Length: 265
Image (cartoon, helix red, strand yellow):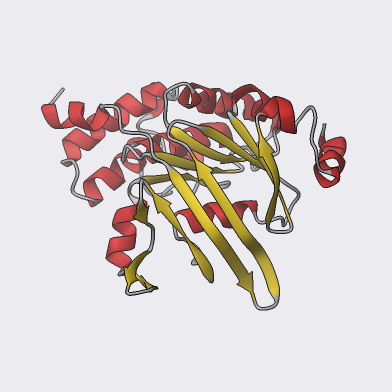
């Protein structure tokens, strides 16, 4: 293995994520209403809440796929999507934002793989596009990562030839290919048939033990209990309460949290 590929495979410093008083609305609909959240390096944070509560929007704000009306996000102290201009925040160029996103892994609900590329090239594409690795080096890295998610024998397949669970595992390998300091998961099992959920959760559990900072939106309560360092419950665009899984899932303080859990447990 080349020195460049070994360097790409090296452990990456886990990121600190800070969300500061974030507000987001569409017309008169307020989706996020003053969210403050700090995710410590290497922490696994699971975000729970009813549909429409703002969970997915919060993830998209963190990597600036959505721009907050008020507030800002920083990762390892660096503002995401904006820079300070006097006492105001000014939007970065799209190129600068794309560079920042390259350090933030994102796993979507619906995989978002390139249908015309093989599994290997789906995973290798971003390191090549960003100039971090040559194509041979990126493909070597992709093979390593596909092996990690249990797909070493599917490198030549196309997404349409894979099950949903396999496609999501490819998407996780793709997120890892840029060695991000944080990975965001937006309901990674919601588009899967029930019998395929376990294989994806097993890969995420493995990641949870690796020291990578993970922020996971999910409805899988048992999974949250097993891997989360902290559970955050959101409703109406606000964080209602947060704490260790044993506290939030077994002894929630807020009536709204208790009501939600009574319906999903």
